[in-house]
Each structure stands twice: as C-alpha cells, then as structure tokens.
Length: 207
Image (cartoon, rainbow, N blue to C red):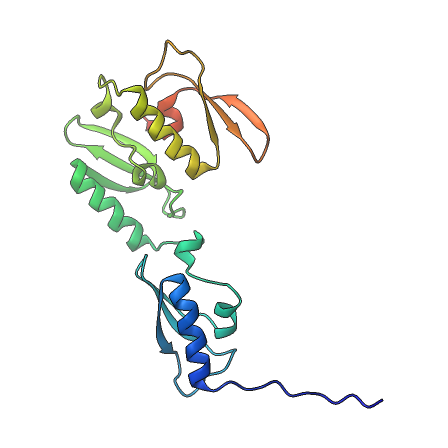
C-alpha cells in the first residue's frame, strides 16, 4: 500500500482574519491586524487588544487560537516599575501619603516592599505593594476606629480570595477587632492555623 502525504490546506488571509475575529468576540478582545501585513500564516504574529485591561500584545496566530490570551486576565502579566508607581502615586494622592521609594530596588514587583509616610500622623512604615493596592494603609489612621464585624470580615474574605485561603472565623468571639486573632485554612496544604491578628494578616508592617 502506498501512503500519500496530504498537504495541509493553506487558509487565505480573509479566512484567518475571520477566525481571529470570531475568537476575539468570545474573549472581548479587539483584533488590530498582523504585525507584518505581508506575512499571514499560523506561525505569524497578530496584534490584539484586551478591552477589559486596555492591554495590547502580539501572540502568534497559532498560540492565540490554541487558547492563549491576555496576560493580565490570566494573572501572569508582570507590571513594569512605571505601572506600579503610577498606582502607588494615585493612592498616595487619595490618602495624603508620601511614597518614599522601594525597600529593595532589586525587588520591584507587586510583592515588593515600599516605604510610605503619612503626613497626618508623621508616621513612616513599610508595606507590600499588593497590600497597599488592596486597601491597607496607615495603621495610625485606623487606630481607635472600630470597624463593624461585617466590614472586617468582608475585607478578610477579599484578602483570602487573593491568597487562595479560607477564613474560618475568629479565635475569640469576644475579641473581634483589628488585633483579634483569626482562624485560616489553606486548601492547597490542607492546613488550618491561627494568625497573630487581623492587622498582621492584612499587611500592616510597622517600624
């Protein structure tokens, strides 16, 4: 028996574009053309924009059609220093803080530590970028302000979602406050433990 090799069908540019447009409509992306309009094949790169994040990137046609999408939607996008500091400065203006730089200039990322100063209380402290972005600020501003249980637990649950953890309640039901101890559970490790207190878990790092 003689086996004959069947050549793959080469799609036209119009057919490729139609497939891209269809996939973009499913993902809420915008197709902006080919990186090189004279080179359109499955291995060539295209220009896409994610409408949700206003993010533009250039995947190969084959990568995009096989399921690879916006890095920001997937949570694998690494923000630049300029993007991180744009967020920091915006929050500082809103909160009347002063951004005094990164603790370690070799570790500038969403998990990196930065130094902030609260003008109102003349107080300086270090915190992670991700903690600041999620709403954790000057501990002196919140000192003496007793948040209701519903608000504390709302913030806790939001933080747990970010960390892949589960909030299982308070260690002492009579000590529900910013320094009250929490019960947390890690599904990944099947491990339950008690934190030092609410403030520690939420990211307040004091000098």
